[in-house]
Amino acid sequence: MDLSGVGIWSHQLRYGDKAQSAEAAAELEELGYSALWIPDVGQTPVLESVEHLLSVTKNAVIATGILNLWMNEPADVAASYAALTAAHGERFLLGIGVSHAPLIDSIESGRYRKPLAATAAYLDALDSAEPPVPVASRVLAALGPKMLELAANRSRGAHPYLVNPQHTRRAREVLGQGPLLLPEQTAILTEDADEAHAIGRRWIKRYLAMPNYANNMRRLGFSDDDVTSISERLLDAIIVWGDEQAVMDRVNEHLAAGADHICIQVLTADSNAYPFEQWRRIATALP
Image (cartoon, rainbow, N blue to C red; front, side, top):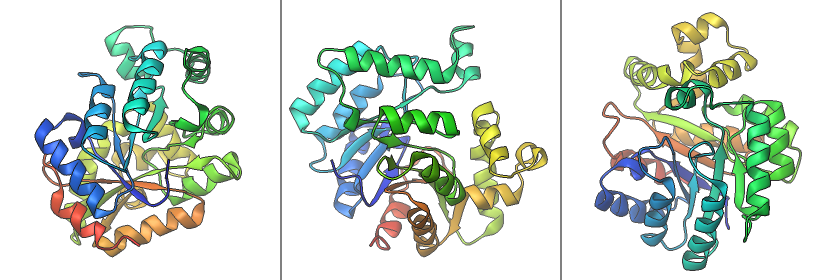
């Protein structure tokens, strides 16, 4: 499983029209993106989307960023992993995450419990499944030091979301050499600062309402005011905007800080539209 290079993180590939997602996935692979990452916030089974994307691509890694452990039974996940790899080869990277207390408790009050212990127990269940999910085929959503340590010890590495190169540098220090570090980087292709900040602020607002992300911003040195007001300082640090070379410059910052692979999430004014034009422009700057 080749996890070098640059990938695409896209909710459109997960929740958009199935035929359009197939067209998009095939083109993204042709453009040179090495992995396609999709989220899991319920609604429909994420592994069905994984199977669909595997079936319309030939070589790209299909990764969950992330599979929500509260919404997917480990025995079912292990069985699906075995079936998918048997059918499509070892191109499925199982990214696992513990999600956020406000989201999970809104579905079932009190269900969310200690995230570190819950993740460790989930990995135990994947290990004891028949057949198990190999350690080399799974990564963990990880922001703080303890979850990063768990990722280093119990998986192939970490997939931090909503981070910057500063976090990548810190994460590499915790992970040490060996485990993969696969951060997500959000990008907006516009050279208009006001437009970039307006799009970015609308998008990031819901994430900063989640304690996990807000606390991580504070660990990165942002103030309470930066987080609550969604300051331009915070936006410019977390979201790269400008032309395609500006995006690649940020990618190279992550690589220099210790990342192995970066998945780019492109934002536009229309959050539901497939950003084909932007994906193509960024692909022209890929090494």
